[in-house]
Amino acid sequence: MNEKFPGQNQVHAELLGKLEAAINPPLFLIHLKLMALHVISSAASLAVCPQFGFGYAHQGHGLMEYFMVAGPMGCQILCGSFYFLGTLLISNFVLSSFEWRKMQKHLPSMLTFLISLSLGFFWMISATLTFELVLWWTVGGVVIFAISYSIPHLPSLLRLKILSS
Image (tube, rainbow, N blue to C red; front, top):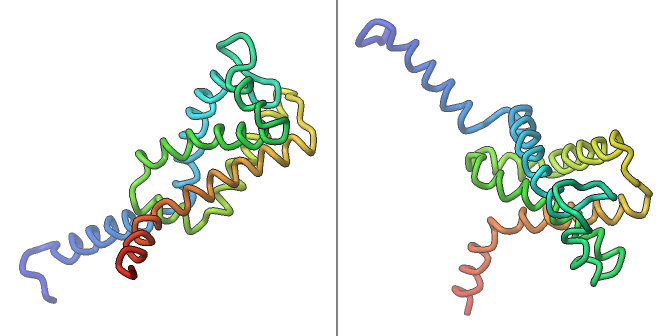
């Protein structure tokens, strides 16, 4: 036994367990955090930009008036992007760097989870969902997630570009 004081090995094991949990967070907990953040973000998003004909807290079309300048397809892409942008911005501040990195490693599952959760909500409230609307709205969500995935790599890419000049 290599203990200098009683319980030393137990303390080391507990510390290692806590460190492992912080460095490698369970994917299930990241999904739960994202779901909670997405509910908050969605409520804020729907207050200013109705989705699939559903909105609250205002009269009129909200941001849709501005997004329609891009045409119906462009509007759906911009609406989907705006809808998920809030979730990504909030999660950038709430998730630890280890959780953010793990979320990026599992981006397809996170994206599928959030899009399915959102579309399930809209379906439950009987929003106007057509294949074309859902397709372009989903493209907008995928685009914003793809942009968020590339942002952490941008500084290192710029450094490489500067060093190679």
